Image (cartoon, rainbow, N blue to C red; front, side, top):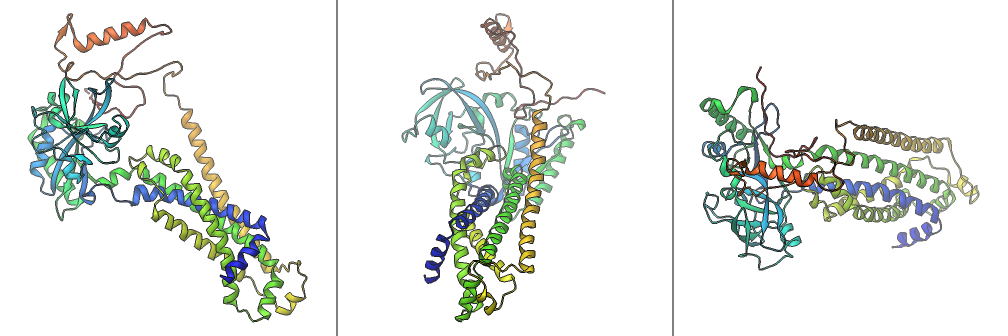
Length: 522
């Protein structure tokens, strides 16, 4: 307490040094706290599923797609023939129109096997999850609500279980509400059993109708490598049995990856790059603080010599200097945590582009412990720097004036070394930042091959049940084509509209779920 009181009095007498040191450390600790919170929330934290370590994603890459997905028949084959997978489940997502609560609204709907959530180990917040048999075609239609849709669109109604909605011309009963989960594989509003999807029903017996994704749960003791071999064996068997469904030009293969790797693959390079940059900023802050501490200590040579004359040893002097340094570094660390906390929204917005776990980024006790540890290390290292200089004789220091700084040749080299380190590290950061800015400018200048000025786009999702059969004629034209023609005609007559067109996708959009590849003969 005596050291602390003396340190606070001493720092109060040099407000310019104290303020500059605190701000310097706050920037370094704040940048590292922010970067570590992203690494911690996305890369290090367990998945919010009970069986997170055993969950895998089974992919079917091809010559023109990283995952060509699976048909319903293929899912059934893998489910029955793979021994390293305790369970497999199918998934796909569709936009549907929901009626029954105010205005009709489009909802993104996850379509899954009835044991999908049991496989993940997810417990509902309200009600129940799907029961065995509810994925069969013709089973009573039921839905699960996502936590976000329940809160944002339905006001968190605690009595929502048991109510009904109309979707795809059928009445669906709400059986439960899910807890907050990552928006993976898609940001779905509601969930329904696979058998209730009208689009899936059209390709139920088509082995080449590859619509669904496949997830699995490793059997006890099984590894990803073993599952990869097992799945590849089953795939080779299917290739030999149904050659027409696996054309050689497609080059269909199989791949098994852990779900944790799947969720973090895109974010890992970005987050580690940010963490490395933050470490450089921290090194700059540390060398700056150490240089300030050294300069301040040179002006206190007479005080230090007087303490030594009165019997203070090197350990006692370091303790006092470390106390002062820690006061500055801990205050700067606290300010850095506040800076990182104020930027959480920006961090999550950035992370949303590369991971569905962005909402899990937070300043939790582990992140606070990290910030405290960094602050203490910075304070102790800065306190050690003045001890690296050769010590003057007590008599020489006492004879010097109270404001005279005895700067030896060694002191000059040490200060030059610290300044040189700051410049070198800052130069590396500036070069990296310059390269990234230049890349961004070039990306924004890329010619996409089409003009975007005065062009707007809108998405129209038809009722899959009502428009399920394109052969049904209305006014001697298929239903969908008839709808398209009438839509184009009415939009084309709107004031200010020069031209109208329809497309299944917009250019350079990679989020289209139904990209159907084709081969050109020869």
